[in-house]
Image 1 (cartoon, rainbow, N blue to C red):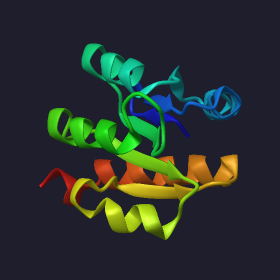
Image 2: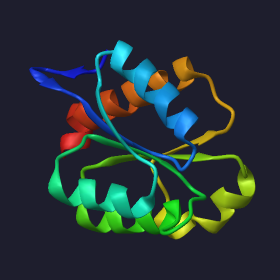
Image 3: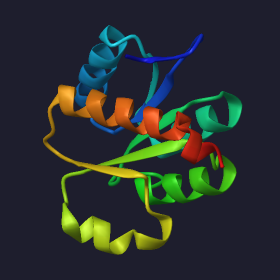
Image 4: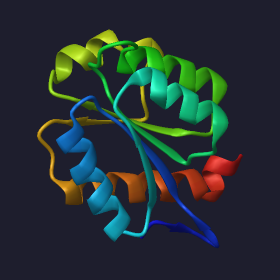
Length: 133
């Protein structure tokens, strides 16, 4: 888990709830991912523009810049980035985000094992020969 050949998978976790960010970070680090966090969309945007990440895990509803805004920018500026959206608003958010849709949705509350399974699956798909075409 967490490794892409010799390259450790780098994940940026963004949520305005500090406890959620801390729990996700601890779990993903146990799974051998390299994890950085941000508690605002603006901080996340700065990190995305200054460093390389394989995965963006972003809450949809945040103050300053929404997760939807962050996802829209990330899709435009980092087309190879795997984007996973977290939401407690379920299908309503999915219906609103069809144009700037993340690759995956996780509805809160979700298990940490479910999260790492989604990341592993997304990374495998992105590295498959079909995804390289």
